[in-house]
Length: 456
Ligand code: HEC
Ligand code: HEC
Image (cartoon, rainbow, N blue to C red):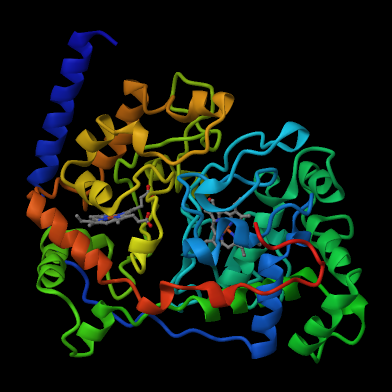
């Protein structure tokens, strides 16, 4: 792009920012209750814990849910973008795998922390909300499986647990590598030869699982053949929900009338309201359960979307992928900020690595996007993967379309924070950390019924 066009472009952006500034500021909704939750039985939770750590659920038996959501990295993986099946190791020591097993691409989005799942007022899961409570559906939920989603899933968290196993890069494996990856390649989720039934067969074939399923679902499991993947998903959800509630932070204590937050954190809380953060990060879980475009940098392989004029699929249109509505382009779910200090990197593609850098983003989201420091991304290196990681960020036309979506976002405006205000807001965000979440090692089982290793 020539200098002239670049300057014109900046002027356009300036004008757009100015026009947004002049709009009236809505007031944030008042905080409400975080919503009740239903806990599974102790036996369901125990079964779910084993399944969460068991690589048997992955096509090539080389990755478990815990690999990307490990207690030692506070239910995330400490990477900008996960290294899925084929990689080796945990957290930021994870590599991209060797020879035939090596990964084909990075997982496209940042692995989310799993705190406070199952709260009644959380309506959507995933960055784009593609799993959602939907009473128009027979199952009670909308999801990528549509009407193939089986009945009997207890809650939105159970529904989510049906899907990582159906992703080639996350857990299933590539092409013809195993029976699960073949079913995925053929688009078969439900039915006798679908992914879920094939995984249920695997679980039935491991004698050690029977006693756990029978104890968890005594009314439904009399013999091994009664085990279903829906039961597995319900049990995994029971474990996630019970293990990772985190609502006893200094912020919660302060709300209960105790003197638990520092002066800086209290100033930060006031700024969080004054600067408009609480409009979107509303209520006790700091989310309005809606989708917004905030000019978040887009790094990594993307999900196959393209701004007009490009065809490499390196973009991620976010909510538009679910709604089909182009007005939703580059919108992502407002995440809860509970335990945010523990779940870096931040944003749907994990572009920001520190709380300071993401809070600073809001000073001028478009400028922050345009001047994004690529060196902060935490991406295990491999030349062919590295080559595409910043293609979108290096293209003014493409970052420009991300910027324009943010400029149309009525609730987003430059927050104009001084350095000390940023630091106060960071202190407030740290006051959302529940001390019980600092050490989650008790959530790691000693072994799993398949006998597969759980150390990575
Ligand atoms: C290869 C890494 C990886 C594996 C393995 C994995 N996940 Fe995830 N998880 C992710 C990523 C990435 C996202 C966000 C994906 C998106 O929004 O499109 C996610 C999102 C989630 C969410 C949604 C959280 C929210 O707040 O919306 C839950 C719950 C979850 N995973 C549970 C699981 C369970 C259960 C398993 C095993 C059955 C599992 N994950 C396996 C990477 C992984
Ligand atoms: C217009 C709505 C909106 C406003 C206003 C807003 N946010 Fe956000 N916030 C979001 C959305 C949406 C995301 C996720 C975006 C993505 O992943 O692309 C997010 C992400 C974040 C994250 C990273 C969360 C994670 O798990 O990765 C932090 C921290 C954050 N916001 C803090 C703030 C602060 C501090 C302010 C005020 C200065 C603020 N937000 C104002 C909507 C908003």
